[in-house]
Length: 392
Ligand SMILES: *Cc1c(COP(=O)(O)O)cnc(C)c1O
Image 1: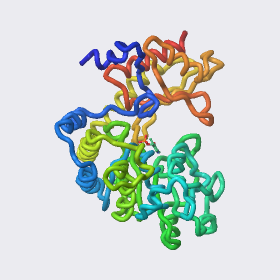
Image 2 (image 1 turned 90 degrees about the horizontal axis):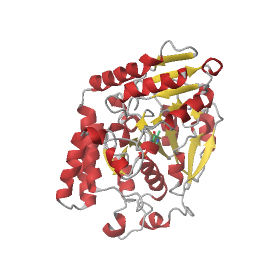
Image 3 (image 1 turned 180 degrees about the vertical axis):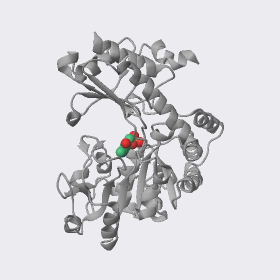
Image 4 (image 1 turned 120 degrees about the vertical axis):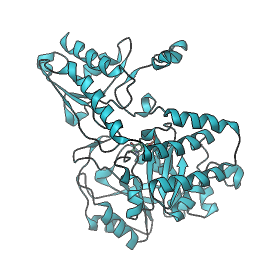
């Protein structure tokens, strides 16, 4: 096992594994399925199964775990966004399903608050939906929203972020968007659908499904944050909307002789079983223990970074969402002689590369260390390696 922990399999192939202090990042592999999930995935090999049937069965279980009417397993939250966009436009009409991403004759526009534009909204556009923005960079009002709704509007995308104001989503600092309560109220009045990107909103547990219970038609969740493969995600929603999303399935080619856009967004039966077990584990596991470990790992990373001239390192104690705790390291380049950016690059070029988050523009000269994906012992290596570079 020890050799596997060090990424031996990659080295045998001539590739260089890294220490991941960035957390759940798709770029580095996103997640490691838990042991229970892996075992369940292996057991899924033992038979073939009609996938629409399997999806229906596990969809009921996942819906129950998340306290929503209905659920559907997708190839990542990104695919859930794409399929939901398609479902908003084509609904149950197979001719329209086959026509996408050409939206001629459909309500092909999705609204989004300008202050909520973010990286992953691109995933919705895969369906053919075009975004129309309302409000400005900082906020949006009820009338901004109402005025933006036309006979071409199929729905609105709302980006969930339960973290404190100023939290970064993609390149944006979360600002003052029109609340989901208001968005749902106005959307219902105008008969348009509401889609919520809640990919990273997985803790506290009542966030799972919360937006659907509030009245959204669907909320997407990234299973990469919950101990499943990073290649799976969930659409949680109303019975009506999950039925429409299901009609976009990659199984439609053979199952229904319908060529929808979902085909390239395939999931394996092993992944479908794995994510079901992962969600069950997530809603029943001891989260106190999970958080205590993340806090301890953060303290271990922090220890060597204290009392270095020009360095202000402190614990990030956020526990909401997907990556609890961490260490923020502020660097005064004039004293350390190295910028955060250069430090990040130097860490990547070590014999065993260490990948960290560099402070995005507005955070200045900082790096962020996330314990989420660290193997045992790597917390110490990360802290000490950074201390060494800062003092050399
Ligand atoms: C990770 C993430 C996604 C994409 O999810 P995948 O499962 O990787 O496709 C979408 N939105 C947010 C906010 C995310 O954090």
